[in-house]
Amino acid sequence: MTDQRLSDCLHCSMRSESIFAGLLPAELENLGMEVQDIALPAGERLYREGEPARYAYTLRSGAVKLYKTLSNGQEVILRLLHHGDLLGFEGISEKQHRNDAITLAPSQLCRLDLENLQALSQRLPTVQAAILQRWQDALRESEERIVELGAKRAEARLATFLLQWAQRYPHLRSVPFPLTRQDLGAFLGLSTEHVSRIMAEWKRQSFLHESRGHLEILQEPNLRRIAQELPGEKADKKNQD
Image (cartoon, rainbow, N blue to C red; front, side, top):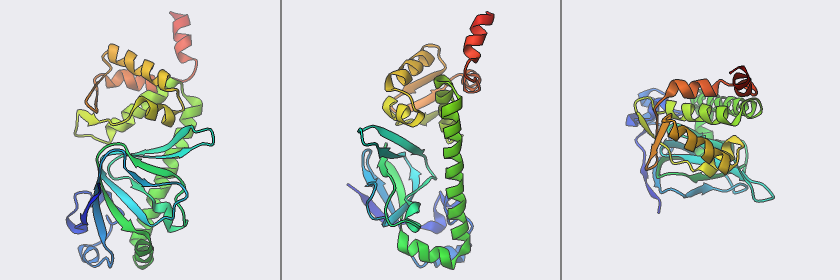
């Protein structure tokens, strides 16, 4: 069940990460639109591919996956979102959502009406520039992941992802980690079984620890070394030994 209330953007703890970060206090107090805080349980769908786009969201806490389902039923995860990430903003220029969005953990989000947001961005160029910058950042991240999928071994892909995920929580040793092995595989282009084998081996070697939806990286240098390995390097090292 969705819990919702009006957001106080001026005193929001996520203000510095939002599209309103560059606005003055007086501008925030006179946005001319309502921003709603909503709370969703894990497994709640925000929207489906092809549905009319009515709202955009900022993820305040929790996790959300954006994905497409192929004609053969296979799920391909496009992005895995953390706190501070945006979703649904394609609705500013498109009438329909281009993917599905579902929460992976209990999540807090800000919900913005797209028609009102479009009018606001035209009135306040700072907001329009912030949205464009976030789109560009997301595009760059997607391009970097495509390169990694083609250039890195499975272990390197997974190590890179885990390190990047943990870096989003710089003040926590044990970070929220609501992702299943299936989610990781769908995002990294690996089978669920392959991800499970790698994670089991790293836990056996005490590289990391998992407990109740949390992840702690115990040996970051080892994971960084693996993340930097290119195809063939592991085999070359074995031959040299």
